[in-house]
Length: 201
Image (tube, rainbow, N blue to C red; front, side, top):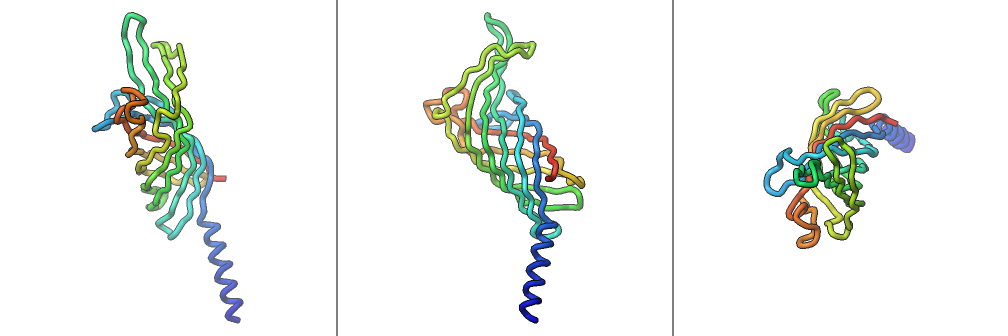
């Protein structure tokens, strides 16, 4: 009898865990910049984020949500010289894993936690005022710190088949290796505001 009770309890627990899990794909826009001391939007650039999320409810009001994302970061610099006007888009492409603690307040959730990013590539695009790309220069990944760490925090909304949210990422790691990557990344760290939507599997 006791064995049957234990088995029944385990099965009920596993069943409740299955109901309490939420997983899917997500994607959206990044509004990013590089900062040294204070974060501002003077050189903000637009990129994108895309990947997978998995949420495991610990209680009715608390969950852990790891994600696996491809995310574009970097900044944009305007130029105006004898060659013309335009902007340089400095792009940093990461595989990023945030692990978030989620507090659920009905359909609204507040989430925060650390993230770890791995740099997979970097380039600079020369873009004219009409949005045409004049040139793309691939940068040597070895000139940069390949690991980025930081914290993420935001607010989300759960709808029956997915999630919608706004999140801010604040980087701790200097992007360029000292004396190697140049002035564009000297002492600079990542800053990103992410707008995203996700759909459950």
